[in-house]
Length: 194
Length: 194
DNA sequence: AAATCACTTTACACTATGTCAATTGACATA
DNA sequence: TATGTCAATTGACATAGTGTAAAGTGATTT
Image (cartoon, rainbow over all chains, first blue to last red; front, side):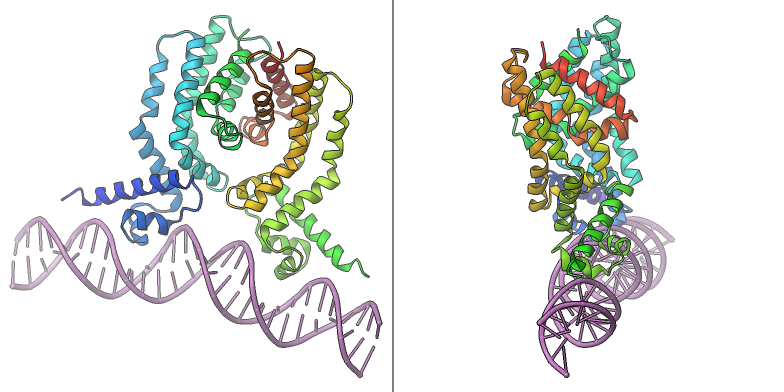
């Protein structure tokens, strides 16, 4: 079987993903992952140079499976600014819970590991793009409130729908995801639309 | 000198604080702190049971010196809801940069260490209180937008002015602190006031 | 003179990441 | 059947960090 190597790689990626979601990105060691994947700890290093690289690969793997970027691309076409805004919060807001554990793990090492930071920013690029489209569409329609430059509005938009904000409201304040989506929509509309 | 012990303790707290601010909460080991404080690593454990406890003590030490809670108490008296809102963002927004490194260090271990989490929540209690007062004052004045329960409004207010949001806008997006304060005020007013 | 105190030095246990070398077992090929 | 290759294993080791333990030092107190 020529896919033997590839199979193990997938096993490892799945194990990493599962553990990260299970433990919300906390206390997951290379040993844990190896055990879960049914291979030796050293085998991990045959497939990934470092823990950081494994994390990055896992994010990309999950992103491929979940197809976030494909889903985000759907927005690039038609729709009004307000529809874009709502669809963005709906989509991203229901996506976050599925990748929270992994995202948390990445966010934790982002400060110390340059590669991780780059990888994370790459993942976020698609979302940033949608924020940009939304704000630009609102502006085109003359709906963007005065007092915001486009750049500032985009960055604020993107900050509001960040995982950190989601975490604080749902994990910390125990909001339901429904509640989160609804209130964030309200906030964004009131903030950016006259 | 009976204050000999106390002096060393203060030295350690100062060293911790300085290192945390210098390195923004990253890569600060007990050895580093000891060296900076001019004592042996083991001496740290004579004064603090663990790294987590040292962090907590440092936060309380800094909080005492900076007197955040005293400053926050000033709001408890008079003023309109809008003034409260603005003053809150002004005060907290200029306070964050002074404690960012330390806060970052705490936020990082909060997930794994229960005591740290408790300590952090304690520090935030004062701020939460101000958020509550502000929203309640707005509500009393009939200014709070419909669509928000008081609980939700308070939690959203507190999330918006969280350190995580500040970090994303200033560190990540390179906003000036002035810009941050101004835009956050705008966002909060548009969001919560009719 | 003895006790106490704050601190030092040295050593060790433990966990985690990451490296290295020798080895095993399966499969491919000549 | 012998040879080579490949994925993975085992075990040892280096490094860095937290935390524990014990013996020693030097100044102050009593």
